[in-house]
Image 1 (tube, rainbow, N blue to C red):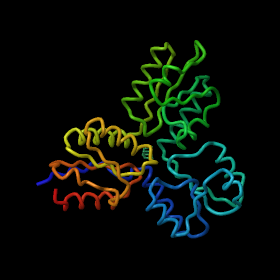
Image 2 (spheres, helix red, strand yellow):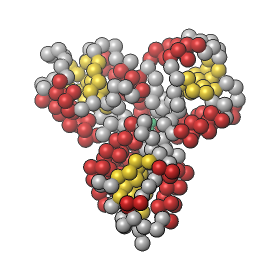
Image 3 (spheres, rainbow, N blue to C red):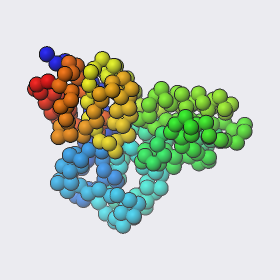
Image 4 (cartoon, rainbow, N blue to C red):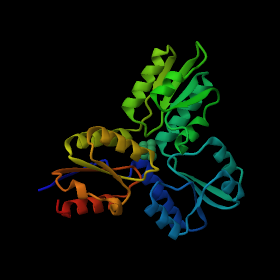
Length: 285
Ligand code: SF4
């Protein structure tokens, strides 16, 4: 009999669940509803919201052209100037679903910047969460994502530096990059801002992947935390598959596996995880 281990931490995290619930609450209230960017990286959820009349604002220009309605900010948060645009429009009601863990990083960056420290954000510069975090620095700020960038990162001698992480960054990699910066003799004040939901998810994925013959990671390729989960699982289990829905699952070559692990990114709804789990259970390997 095949053993299937599904991670308890798989699926919506607290921040994503809170944001998605806020959108459904606003639908109940009625009126014109917009999200600034897709509320989560999941086509099924975004499609369902679209059917219910929720529209997605894709850019600053879309936002600038809007004069009325409710605008929901997703869990990643937004750059500071987006708040300014929103609050300058009397016809717009803002519903802020920024995850409190992300808001905390905004506060740290603003405070540390105001104290005169330079800021290093360890994460992906093009990710909306990082774009938001960077906007709260009032002085020098840099974003680095790997060892090479940490080695090449230069700040003025004698400056104090505060390093924070994108919430979904790989914790051990964050520690490694801070260590590299420290060796360059910067006076580093580092704040581990990898969120606990991400940490638990990554640790559990690593532990399951190291036992499993095959590992299934469910989530969008556009989702940062899913990508990192995939990388972590691949390190421990060569047969790791990244799928968005059951339709992407092709386990033909995996019929001999006796232990299959399943985990999912923070934007994956529970019903997809259950579908995959039931399919794997039923499949005759
Ligand atoms: Fe919040 Fe963490 Fe979820 Fe990001 S991954 S939305 S920080 S709980």
